[in-house]
Length: 205
Image 1: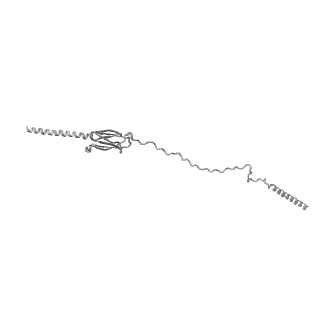
Image 2 (image 1 turned 60 degrees about the vertical axis):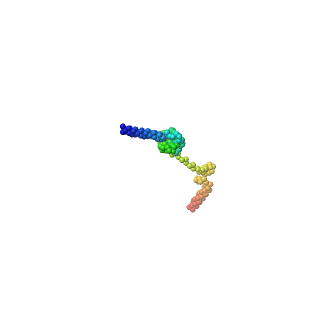
Image 3 (image 1 turned 90 degrees about the horizontal axis):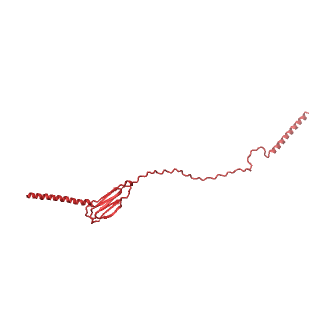
């Protein structure tokens, strides 16, 4: 009887220890899991889910995008949930979250310091321009104007002035003089011829 009694006591003790261990594991695991900060990021939103924090403490959370505040320093107590709109971006951006528990003795899992890179949404990417470049202008350059030299005026000969250097046609002022001399020479020749004939006649007679 005594052996059976000790066996029952030992069995009960083992069962109690096992149950306590199981209960302790469940109790301790639940708060640890509940205090794990959760957050997610899409191309246009940032979702923050913080629960089961100490309601008596001033816990804080901040969210920045490429160093600029998306959620400035915000204080919360037991929990904080929010969905933040992410501005349109044409290239990947860096989203950074910092969660700090107000209790300095809180487990490290209650704090969070994490960064995620987020690509732009499909509709936010601007395709490269396919517009053809403007061809170079083919308009010929305007010629440089050249100063014109005034031409000498054309002088028309006067209708009343007699022409110069005309060819001689025999009608000059010396024509009568030449005619007179010729007449004298002819007359002299005729006289000489007549006297010569007369002299011959007288000789023969």
